[in-house]
Length: 408
Image (tube, rainbow, N blue to C red; front, side, top):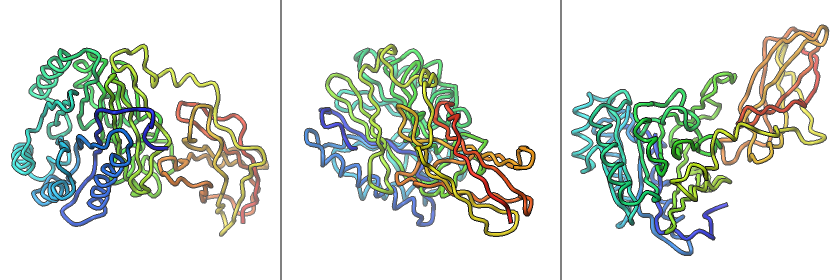
C-alpha cells in the first residue's frame, strides 16, 4: 500500500513528533535524517504531484532542550530540507527540561528563527501550531493565539480543513490521550469541525486504528522516532512493550482541491507504508466522519484460524514457554491488538496465572508467532491453557486456543 493513486493532491506535508535528539549521537538522529529523505522519496514517486510542501514537528524533538540537542536538530533540518519545504516546530515538555521555560523559548527562537506559535498559509491551506508551556500545558497567551487564529482561518473558508498542531493529545480523542492528553484547548477547538489536529507526547503507534478519532473534529496521533509506549496497563510488560526502541513512524498528509484529505501512516524503520489510508472527505461535516466512537459497536472479534495450535517448551522447573500463531483480525480490522493467556491447574480448574501480552502490531514486520515465558508454576503439576485474542475496540474472541502441559 502507498499513496492513493486516484487522489490528486495540491498539498503534501509530513508530520512527526517525539524525535528526542540527544546531545550525543544516537539512533534518533539517523532516524530523523531517514524520515526526511523518505518523505522526499514518497513525494518524488507521486505521479501527479511531486512536492513536499511542509514538515511539521510536533514537540519533543530535542531530548532535554539543550543548546547542543537543539542545534543538532537544526543541523539535520538544514542539511536535508530542500527549497520549497516549510519547516515548523513546536516546543513541548522536553524542550524546557534544560534550564527553564524562558531560556528555552529564547533559545528556540534564536536557533530556529521562528516564533513558538505560528500561523502559516501553505497552498491556500491554514496551518496553526501552538507550543506548550513547561509541563505541557497551555496558558492564556497560547489559548488566545489559538482562538484568534482559528477565527481568521475559518473566515477564509468554512469547508476548508484547518491543520492544527500541539504536542499533547486532546484528552479523550486518539489512543494515548487519556494518560497523555490535555483538555485546556478542547473548548476552543470543538467549535471548528474542519480542524484536523495532530499531536504526540504519548509515543503511541500511529498504525493503531484508534490513532485517528473523530467527534467534534478530526484528531491524529503522530507517533515517535524514539521508543513506543502504549496506553493499556494490564499487559505483562506494563505500558512499555518488548523491543520498544524499534520505533520510528511518521504521517504523510495530502489534500486536494476539493478539500478532501488523505493521511498515510509510514514506518521509517522498514521504509514502508502501514496498510491504512485515513480518509477525510468532508472535514467540516461531522455527519460524514468515519472514525468515531461507533467503532466500539463491533459485530465480530478476532479468532484463531482452524487448525491453529499452541506449543510448549519446558526449559526448567516451574517454567513454561508458550508459543502460538497470530489470530485472524476481526472484520474490518487489520491487526489483533493483544492476547489474554489463562493458565489453570488441571486438577481443580483454579486459575494459576493470567497474563495479557501485545501482538506486536506496532511493528511493520510484526511477528507471525507470539512466544512468552511464564514462571512460578508448581513443579510436576499439570496445567491447561486458554488463549483469547482481543481487538482494538473491546472485542475479545470467545473461542480460545487451548492446550495443556505438565511442568518440570
